[in-house]
Length: 327
Image (cartoon, rainbow, N blue to C red; front, side, top):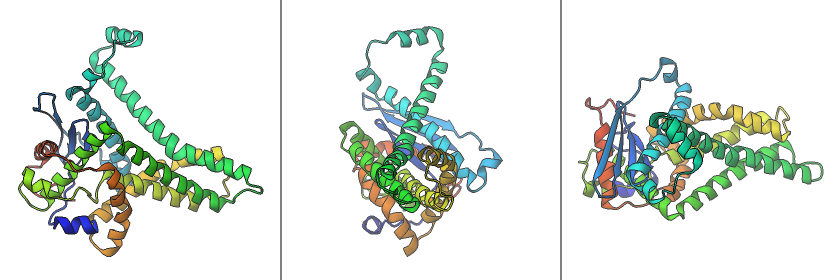
């Protein structure tokens, strides 16, 4: 089964779970239908476990399309929060700590630890969102705008849309490739592989042991990497379909509209991935293929200690009622 899944990108496991996670610094964040768990390997090789109950989702945000927007925003918020927690628990902050500056000293003396953490979390999320917008929305539109002005007579609206899309995809692939070459990030991507393997083991109905998990493929069809790649593809389709007939060539206006379309893209992408991840046929396999290929950059083979973290994280969030986590 594992070899067949790896070869074809198959998601035809006996069971499909909504449980999923995110790789952290020396750990894994695992999200279940009822609980969220953070498991981190501490410097003394023991495991730190932090388990929280999921907050109830307002009824409005359970509606198809809107649930995708909500899920993306909350995943980003909880992901950054968990990443900061893992950096602290794993000892990374102590290794890289420097004498606090004047601003840090002032904040420590005037702001409570909880408020300071919320401030840092908010700033981190804003910086992350800002960098993503700069790289994948503003930069492609800006570069295409320059090309359109340099080429005599312009390049045409249809060509502008296609070129923007090509640049977005190229920047995304290059970004992942460069990240995958960084030593510290490689360990995070190994934990990403451990998360995927653990999920596959559970979906195949096998006991969650290191031996069983190790034999599973590391490419999973319902992965965040695939989600982000589909985000780019859908944004390309929407921008070409809207900007061309409306004859929108102004660079700044295109940037603003790309930004306004972002929630639409998130909602559509979520429903697309939900459908593709739940069905097993030739059409869905073709649609999954690019995202699975992208996971070559974001998932590496984990060692046994990383697999242990994945197992502990998944066990912590599995629901008491069997089947309530069905995809």
